[in-house]
Image (cartoon, rainbow, N blue to C red; front, side):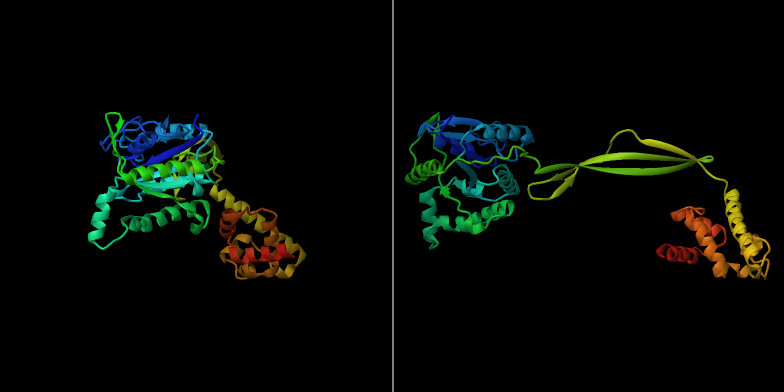
Amino acid sequence: MSEFNIVIIGETGTGKSSLSDLLAGKDLFKVSGDPASCTKETICHKSEIDPSIGIVDTPGLQDSKGSDKEHYDQMIKIIKSLNNINLVVVVLNYASCRLTLSIQYMLRFLCYLFPKDISDHIAIVFTHYDDEYERSKAKKKGIENPRASFQTKYIPEVKKVISEAINVNEKDIIIPTFFLDAEYIFEGKILEKDENTKNEMNILLSTAKMKSPIKTINDKANIKYKEEKEEFEERTENKEEGNKIITTTTKYKRIKYTNYDNSITYSDWEICGTPIIKEKEIENKQSSILDYMKIAQNVLDFMNKNNSSNGGGSILSSFFGSNDNTKDLKDNESFLSLIAEQVIQGKFGNGEDRKKNLKMAGFDYDKIQSIVNSKLKK
């Protein structure tokens, strides 16, 4: 177990494993120019330049064979097992530098993995940087320092991603930046390095040793999603068969995924448990109408016994207007008040059933419901 550890992270083809070899002082990590990721597992080796430092090379982001999840889970497991992580190095290719979505995603994940310490334990290394060539090219354009434009362009983007992920001020985030050419390994030997690469490499190793270990690691961190949450929904379907209504209630479940960029995605709905099936016989519609007419007739009979001025006659003729002396009952306040009492007692049902039954009985639903509401407020 090394006293200090540097974790190297970057996209496939950026020179990540070459940088790991450079810092280790020996050809220990698999290096390939193939666009397919060469590093498939997280590998730890002690540096021969300084044995107190461990170099941790991780799988390249956007693995071309689509096996990221498995390898990243292994990476997280190894990172969590290390007692001391002093520096996380994000590798970018100077020759074709882009802060891609996968790099941004990994930065957010690192903020979730190390929620309190990442802003003070991250560094950027631009690889494939030929200092002599870049300075000569910049001089012809009247540019004194070719590194400045890269620092101005990319470092603020990195700070913004970290700032938004862990809610810290961008001004409080200091990110050491290094420019070097890691391609100095040949047949297992470290070849002579240019002066700039030597200096940058030594400063990088020294920076790691000056950092206190990262203290807080989120044990729940998952490379794929920031958060997973189950959601449930019940769906009811009614089907009429003969004189029965068959009601099927089915419970569904899906997973809500919160990504590291705070976007939301969902899994497909799946049936959860066994559907519940209930059967109910359909009432004879004509019989239902007559039942409610009978209630209204009883109300009318009650009124006739207590107040002969309200008129008499058949309730049917009252509702359908065949008796001129009684059809005004539909607007008789005393009569409608008694009907409202029947409604409150539940004799006309509830909700849509109430509305349907009152209309079938010949009443103005809105007028009756208004009277019901007034009675209930008293």
